Image 1: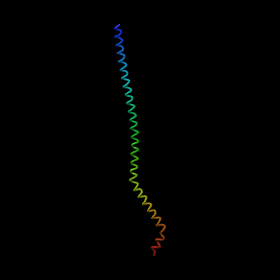
Image 2: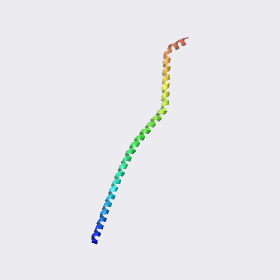
Image 3: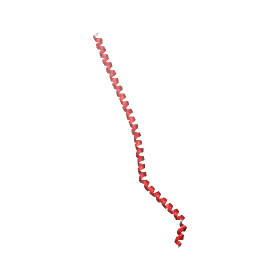
Length: 103
């Protein structure tokens, strides 16, 4: 009877080693799959954030360039409006000017 018990213990240990090894292998596969998934999610997030950051920077550049060019553009528009008003005034009063010059 002692031989049978020894054989049972040996088989139980062998079986436990197999089960433990399979569990460790499965855990490694699950860990590798989880790492791959996390890497993919982070890569996608990086791409989205990079795109969003690019949009933010482009918007800031647009606003900054609009600020610096707006006064120039406003001044140019103001000058053009003033010249246009002056030309319209001169055209309306050409006769008056001619009469005054003739005196």
